Image (cartoon, rainbow, N blue to C red; front, side, top):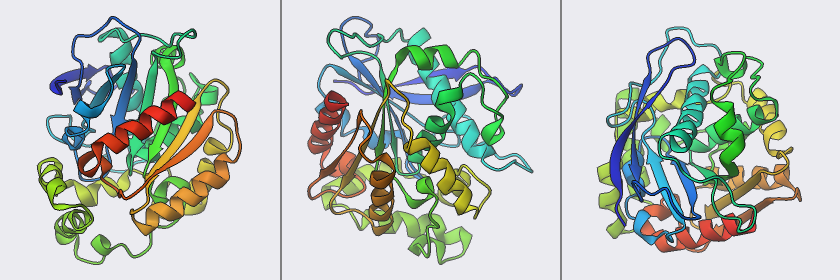
Length: 321
C-alpha cells in the first residue's frame, strides 16, 4: 500500500486566499468499492508523515488521508491574525477539516456510506491537539450550515455543509489532551523553559516515551518551531478553561443522531491524556453510537510504535459505531 503525497487547494469561505494543504493518501486514485475514508488530523509539533508506518497495516476497506495542518510542511502558513477573536485560530482549523472532507467528496470522489454494508462514508480522527478540532466540529454540527459565528467563523457555511452531512459517519478522538475538555494543562515540562527552547524540550520529552524503533519516525515528522505556536489551537480565549469545558459538555454530551463518536487511548500514555479520557467517558456516558477502547502497552504514538494494534482498534471502533 502506498502513502503518496498530494496537494489540495481549499477554496476560502472567509474572503482570504485559498488554503494549500499537503496530504498523504494510502490509496490514491481509488474510487470503486465499498471502502471507508479515514481523515486523520495530527497534533502539536508532528506533521502528517507521522502516520507513515501505520498506513500499510490498515485493511483495504479503509483509505487513509493524513493531511498537514496550516504551518506544517508544504501547507499554507499558520493562521496568525494580529487580534484574533477567541477560538478563531481553531476555527480556521475546523474550516480546513471541512474543506478536506469537501475535497475528498468532490475531487477524490470517495464513496458515501452504504446502508446495506455499513462501509463507505468518511470517518474523522483527531490525534492529541487535533481532538480540539473534533470537539469544535461536534459543537457546530447540529446547527450547520449556521455557525452562530462561533470560533470567528462566517455566520453560514453553505458550500462546506453538504459534503459533511452526506458523507461523515464517525468521529474518533485518539489520545485527547486536557485542552479539549476545558482543563488547564498545568505545568507541562515543555512549558517550564523559555519559548525558544520549548520545541526542543517538547520533542525530547515525546521521544522519551517511545521505544527505540519508533524514534526515527518521530524525528522525521517533528517540526520544532511549531510547538510554541500551536498552543493557539484552542476553542476559547487563552486561559478561559471554564468556557472550553462548557463547549466540551455541549459537544460530547449530545452526539447527533446518526453520527458515531469514539475514544481510543493507550494504557502507557501521559497523565494529562488519562485525565482527559476520564472526562470524555463521563460526558459521553451511555449515549448510543458512542464507545471507547484502550490499547494495552501503547502510549501517545501508537502509529509509530504499535501500528497494527492501532489499526485493529480503529477498525473495531468503526465497526462498532
